[in-house]
Image 1 (cartoon, rainbow, N blue to C red):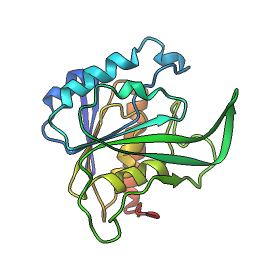
Image 2 (cartoon, one colour):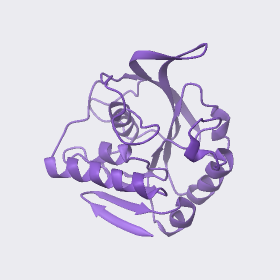
Image 3 (cartoon, rainbow, N blue to C red):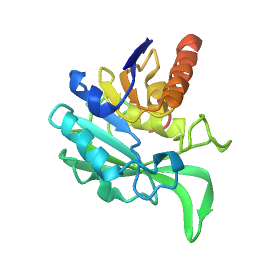
Image 4 (cartoon, rainbow, N blue to C red):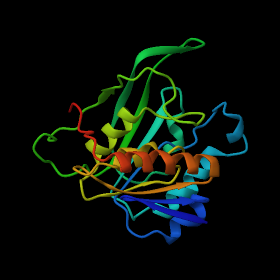
Length: 220
């Protein structure tokens, strides 16, 4: 296992099923798990339902909230192990839709579970959509990176400022980048099994930390 600390982020290279038991209290899981029926060749040997169920057993009872980011054509039945009360869904919209056969791929879907964060001025209500303004293709070297604008919205909307945010399937580190903000910072713990993507995550987070603060409050 390899561990890197960058700013307010604690990053682990390894299998989350081996590492989660060693991690203490966290508040909110914000993640994009391997989804069912995906066509990514390097994920072909992963059984998504089994992986998510095993991951959830390791965090069950230890967290207050969870946010799962799935494609609009991803089967939400994968979330059946989640024991937190359901809160709502939200649409993460694309500025320019794509096409997959008969499916108009115009958004991702986010599923929120657990107790909502504290109500504060400017964040009394938790909305149901966020439009990304970035349509310049992939934002990171990964088969399926999520839009940073979308993940920043999730982190701001569904976590408290003093939360510890966990992404057990960190990928290229988008959740960590969203948590690196000196004014609205969240401590972040990320785990990634693929060394290439772990290195990508470290580089992305290091770059933002070295550049200083950015504001991810966005529209409510």
